[in-house]
Image 1 (cartoon, rainbow, N blue to C red):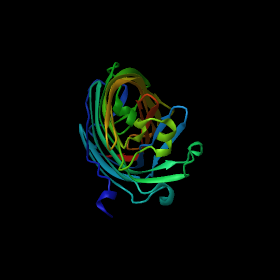
Image 2: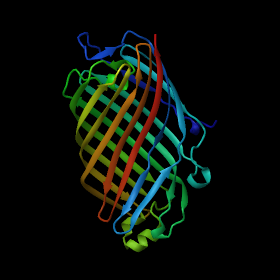
Image 3: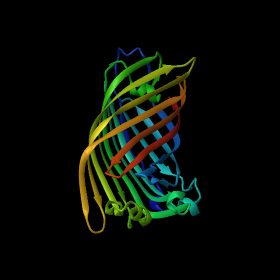
Length: 313
């Protein structure tokens, strides 16, 4: 397997400890070994005013990982499975890489993540006379992000939501504030939007082959951890807010710069079966980003799904 087909995840996770926490089942003194199976995806759309929406989709490869956690530290290493879930003729070959780390302390959660996906396909848009699938092997999507959350309820634990080092014992909820800082980059060797679109819109801005957005913002949200009967639990986080965003739009012959405001939302769902010794959890995370210009906008979704099974010794 070639090196670019591998996904290396070297993630450190740190955990806080509280002797007086009675809301959740705590397993800090257990050595926890787990494995996960899932996928990452970053589809995006270019919505052109009065013209329709161009849909850009990456091929999807599953990944598998193995991790170990003890007390406040942990390590996870994963690799892509070299199999594309969508047909190569229509969706091409996508190279995927992700690395990240997470740190939770008392009422604060910190997350640092980098995504890279290269190889997309432009989906059918019959209104514009485009072919059903146009494979863009050089189209690259990158994301750098640093996020941090503050939970207003000091007894609420993000660890219990995920169910690895803790499990939900009693229902709990909290409001939170999330500070989000991110860089989004989309690049291609040729114009990202087909020339037929720029000709119809009569805008030279549509000839871009590179876009970069730097954003700083704040989201307000609500998180809930719910104990179902016996060993089942479900919970999630939902946030909405806005960012100040600087956008750079580049073509082969010029660069345009803009500063403005943009809405943001994200949600996270964690659900599964959690006993004292073993657990099986589903993690679904989605972060939406919107980049607006005068006559078009770009909407991207960073999606992650993991099925996690583990054992506590």
